Image (cartoon, rainbow, N blue to C red):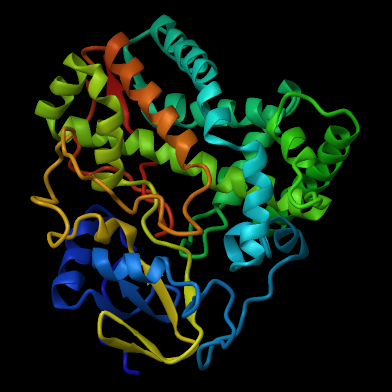
Length: 412
C-alpha cells in the first residue's frame, strides 16, 4: 500500500495546530494511510464512528502483532523495560487482558477512588496554600501544581514512603520519557545509559516494595492488588510489578496534562472560565467537556489487523498497524455540534478521551476526581487566575501519545 499522506505531526508548530491537521485528514478520509515521524506507515483513524468501531473490535485488531507489517521488526527492548511494560495489561488482548483487569478491579474500584476524594482535596489545598504563601503572585502551573498533585496522590495511593518520593518522581518521569512517538530527551539531560540504570533501579525498588507489601499488607493499592483474588487466583509478582508501572504511566501524565489543558482552554475561552468560576457545580460536566475538547491522551496504543479487513469501507491488510486518534475523533462534526467550541454545559458528551472497550483507561475515575478537585479549588481560591505570558506560543510536550504543556506561567 502506498503511503498517501505525510503530515507534519511533530514540529513545535504542528503541536500547536494538531487539531487542524487531524481535521484535514478526517475531512479527506476518516481512515488515512500516513507515515509517522518514526518512519512507520500506519493507518490513522480520525472519525468518531470509525474509531469507536476499531477500539472495540478485539477479534480483528490485536494489541500484540500476530503478523508484523512487511519490513517491520519488533524493537529489541532492554530487559528492565520489558519487565516493567512488556506483556502488561495495556499490551495484551482478551482473554488474558480480561483476567488481569478483573484482578486489579478487585482493589481499584470506583468506590475506592471516590474514597480518595477527601485526600485529593487535602493535597490540592496544601499545594495552593504553598503557592499563596510564596513571595510574588506568579508560578508555573505545570511544575508547581499539575505535576505534584497527581504525583502525591499516586505516591499515597501506592504506599510509597515519603523518604523515597524524590526518586519516585524521577523514575516516573523516566517512564513517561519512553514514549516511542517522541524524541524527547530524558529528564535532567541524562544519557541513555543513565536512564537504563535508573529504570533498573526502579525495577529493583518495586520488587522489594512488593515483597514488603505481601509480607505486611497495608491500606494501600499495592497491598490491595496483592491480596485481590478472582476464581482462586492472585496476581503474580511480575504481574503486580507491571500493573504498578502501568498505573504510574497512565495515572501521572494523564492527570498532569488534563489539569494543564483545562486551565489553558479556560484562559482561551474566558466566558467559560467565568461560568465555571461562578457555578462550580458545573465541574463534573466541565471536566468531561475538557476531556473531549482538549484531552490528555492524543492517540490510542497501536494495534494490528489480525486478518484482511476494513474500517469504514477502507481495506486494511493483515498485519498492518492501526492507531485511533482520540483527539480527532472527539472533534468529529459528524458526532458533535460545533466540535471546536468549548461548552462546559454540553450534554450527550460520550467522548473517547480515555479510549473505549476493554482497554479503556483504568485510571479514568481517578483522573476525573483529580480534575474536578483541581479546577474548582484553583478558581475558588485564586479567582483572578490568569496567564502571565502570551498564549500564542505554548510549549507542548513532544510526542503523540500524551498531549499537554511542559510549562504554563500564571498569576493571581
